[in-house]
Amino acid sequence: MARRDLIPGRKHAPQHLGRVLVLGLGKSGRAAVEYLLPLVGGRVDALAVAAGARTEASEAFAAEAAARGALVAFGDGAVAELAARAAQGAGADGESAREAGAAPVFDLGIASPGIPQFSAFYQAAAASCSELVSEVEFAWRESAADSRWVAVTGTNGKTTVCALAAHVLAGAGLAAAAVGNIGDPCISAVGAGATDVYVAEVSSYQLASTVRFAPNVAVLLNITPDHLHWHRSFEAYRDAKLKLLANLAGVPGAVAVLDATNDVVRAEVRRLRALGEGGRGFAYVPMGTAEGLGGDMRARCGSDNAAFLDADGMLCVALDGKEHKAGRAGDLQVKGAHNASNALAVAAAAFALGVDDPDVAAHLRSFKPLEHRIEPCGTVAGVTCYNDSKATNVDATLTALAAFPETRPIVLLGGDDKGTDLAPLVAAARARARGVVCFGAAGPRFATAFGAPVGCRPSEPADAAASPGTPPRGEAEDSRTEVRHALALPTMRGAGETLADLGGPAGRDGSDFAVLQASHLEDALDAALAIAGAGDVVLLSPACASFDEFGSYEERGRAFKALVAERSARVEA
Image (tube, rainbow, N blue to C red; front, side, top):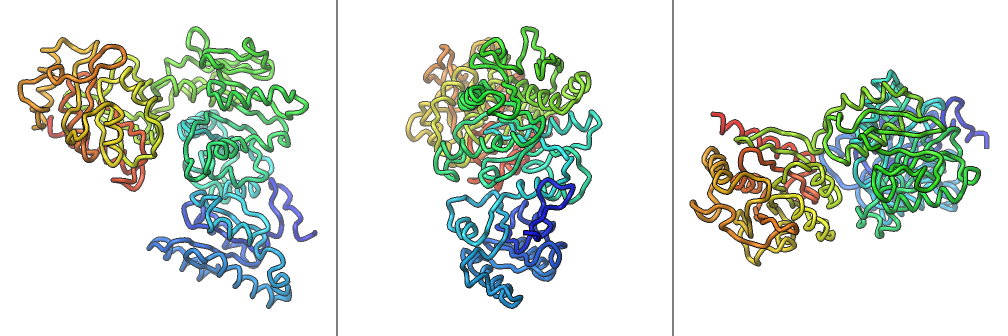
């Protein structure tokens, strides 16, 4: 009908939004409310906010929103309360309360990503709304018709790829910004009107509630088990991620960049290839092959396009019949094979948007590591420390371990346990690390997985010894003793014992391997430093959430950096 006509110059923005429900007052929910409040009385007939649980911050925001004309309710019954109030208001306007509930009360609902689709809260909203979408979807609809969107998802690597892509695109002169889970909420950036290219980090939570969302470039990095408590099954999680590709056929020149080294994503590559160009409706660029990032899918499977590392370590992208070079992976400031993959994904996206090779290469090289992602954070008596607090699952920690091919780090593992299979982590750590310190709520289960004796006390080695490639035993122990003395750290078990004296099961490659336990992050760092020597690496890459001790992985990472700085200053004093 006429009232649903679209606004010219927008992606898909109705002139009349009608009655709108915002579900949740997290970061994106607050941003949606801020965008909608000025529209009340015009495009918006009524704005209702189901605020969820009460907090000091949410109550203050809700009070301000109510003063500006929004309907607000808290608690589990908020949606039903708001629906009744909105329906009464509609009846007063002569709409007969939408025939006493015969149709949904709200024309549009906007859901915050932290609210699971299967929750009673979400289901109540779905029943009360003609349409319930994510804030990302709403922002895309409201954005300018000629704006371009690069949407990035995957189990790991999203934030780095978004930050790197925004860096490259902005450096090349585009009005690009990282939005979504990184930077401002999408709707805030759209409302500000200063962005032409939105580089959006989109989670499975957000994608699950998309309908029309259609980016110009879709980047699908990897899919491995995660967030199963939210989605209830791996299949539902996978399908939410794959919704990123659902509407690309409707976007002229759309390109999907797909990590073909990942088994699940490679299956999608095969499905897309079988459809043919006519059945697919968009181009796709597979990155690597089953054999790794060095594989060229054109040679492997006859793909039209491909992204890969050549024999010289050059980042190569073949797209639309053109061969692009984006510099050598070895010249990147960000460490590890995973960052070579991230850079390759960004290069493919940038080339798809028309950026020249020299610009892509130059700005890939100038990008520096992000906070909490294998972030160098100082040295303590010659021991280099890295903050990888963002590694909240096993796959992310496996990636971090692979980023240190020339040294064997001592890894801090633990936190709020996700209950995932630890066998791959144990195997990789024994192959690549000198030892682990298991801490926090997950510490006992992790230590047991590494073969620690039952009842091994925190801050006490379960087993330990020197690794191949470290200094000779006497020299290495002298170095470790210097670190312990400089920090006044306790000696593990006995003042005269080296790690080799402590015994314990050997690593898979025949090397000895240290397994220690600690109660908290601070204890874990001290335990690691107590067995470290100059030239060693201590890596916080927990493979767990942070909620046993901290409010977020960011808080955990900053706490770790502060602990490192304090110990570094103590050594230098």
